[in-house]
Each structure stands twice: as structure tokens, then as C-alpha cells.
Length: 140
Image (cartoon, rainbow, N blue to C red; front, side, top):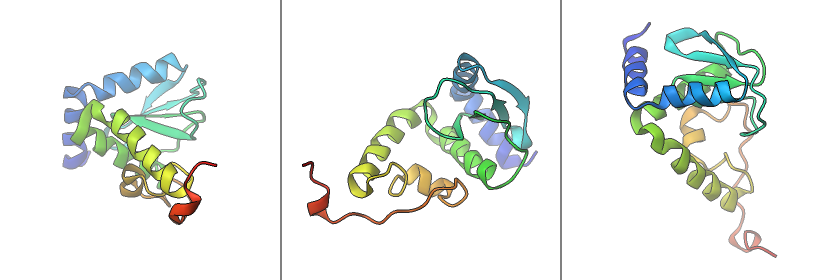
């Protein structure tokens, strides 16, 4: 395991975000296996929220289907794991605020969300949308 991944793993253990991720995954029926760089890959998640192929809490990467041991999606989710190492369990409320901001600007929750942008929109299979003009953002 790379030293940066080891540091991330320790920080996510200390800040309890990986424990929270394992609890969320198990609550949703996911089964976990060891993945690359200390990630724990959970498959079979059935709760339906969040609506995503995969999401991350701490070092726990949780998906509805079996997650591969590499590739762009896992790189994207590993970057989210690093965000948890830096911010701990502040990530979910901050992510929600960032998603709301992005939705106001673009009509989607990822294009202007700094968490998703820093994790790599393309690796997460997101299509970036432009910022809408201010007059099209107002509710009708």
C-alpha cells in the first residue's frame, strides 16, 4: 500500500468515517471485501439513497453492483476517501451544501460541486453542464 493511502486509512479510522461507512453499507445490505490501497469495497447496496452507482464514506466505497479493483470510478471514489481524511464527518453536510449550490447554478448536483470536481468529474462518469444565466435560475 502506498504511504499516502496508509495515512488516509489511519485518518479515516481515527475520525470514524470508515466506521460510519461500514455501518451505512451494512444497513443497506452491502457485503465488503478488501480493495486496493486500503479501500473497502461494498457491493449489493439496496437502500436507493444516494442515487449513484457508488458512493464513499471514509474508506468504504459502497455500490449497488460489484465494484472492480481499479479503473476511473474507483480512482474517483478514492479521491472522495481522501476528502473524508481531511474533513471527517463534516463531508456529508458540506457535500449537501455544495450539491445545492451546484444545482442552483447548473441544474445538477455535480457540475459546480467542489467535492465532485476535485474527485474528477470524468472519472465519476459525470457530464459537466454550464452555469445557467441568472434569469434562468429563478423559480417560476
